[in-house]
Length: 417
Image (cartoon, rainbow, N blue to C red):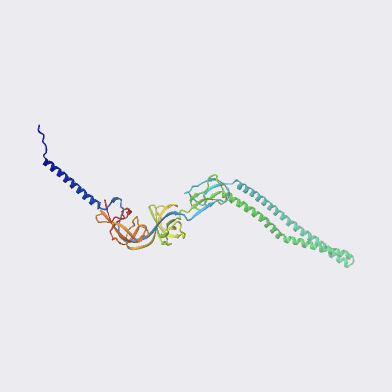
């Protein structure tokens, strides 16, 4: 059998073709590699956050966060020592002035009250006895005056008779003198008895006043102990919502212990913290927008704390608007404080990496085709918490990337895929 063998010429042709194909492939790969090496880096478009430059009103504002607080907080204290026997409410319960919050037991206080009541009853019985005795003394004084008058009248008549008989020398001078002396003595006794009777009302009033003072002291002690026993039922005293209960069952508490705290939920303010630098531009009376979850409520700055703590300043904001849902104490709030309004300015949403003190910034502006973006230098004016004022470098309707592009800072152009 004959075997066909390729000629040397054909082998040379095939070898030349293979070498040429390899050279062409290498050249094409080199061209592609060079072209790809010169292409800008790319970023995923669906991961970018963009905004359009607009012409309109610019609201210069600063922001802070905080909570709603109730400035009207009443501390409820107990007035008597004792042991907590019952807690009738929990934080969050609405209470009225007469509602009992905590019941405290004190057997010693109850015993002292009973003892004080017995002492008062005994003192009142003694007072009634003194009044009866005083009435008897008055009768005795009147009887003494009447007796003295009778004796004086008799002695005086006897003196006059003996004096008349002495003129006729029937009675001796000694008898006349004795009769006159006796009449004078009985007259003095009569005057003394009359003086006692006249002074008796004054004496009686002084005795009654002294007795009433003792009784008043004992009554006051009974009332005080009654109040202390009644205060063992610790009441709210005001209408509001229980914020804290600071005692537990079985706990022994001293008088003046902070048993509970009650807030007035109808009067709330926002207490927010802003940076020390921003606080320098905030004034009392400036308008504030408070974000309470999904609600936005108008407010007004009412107080600025003069002390800086950890590079923050605390502000109080009064709520001047009404929320759709009644807010509660300790609700987290975001506050946007309006510093000024510029009616016509070139503005855009604030880029993520832009610092508060920046006056220049580099941002990526999208090209019209939306497939790439180039880095441009922008002059910044006023900076708000959400928007910035553009002085130069961008035009109205330009679209810029707001996302953090610090990894591509040195790239003049980026591709968007």
